[in-house]
Figure 1 (cartoon, helix red, strand yellow):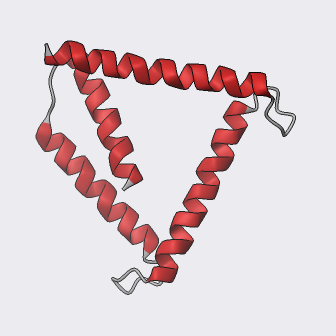
Figure 2 (cartoon, rainbow, N blue to C red):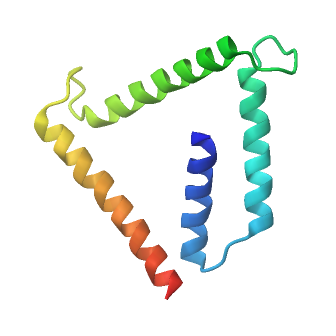
Length: 109
């Protein structure tokens, strides 16, 4: 589900800049993303995702993304995040979201 949201966010944000939304491209991307994610979760390839397969997939993905996020926040690469590094990250992330929502507001007017 998170990949769907990220995909929608990326497609919509690029479309907002272009002032148009290609709904068929969005649907195709969502379908492709869903198929790929399901296949990745179905570790034994039986066409079904068990609770164990689902949890293993989600935990592995969460750990990978969390580590990547931590490494981005840890600007000096010393293996720990200072208060200053964290605040720089939060200000950057907040600014990006504000910019996106401002573009959406302008697009709706």
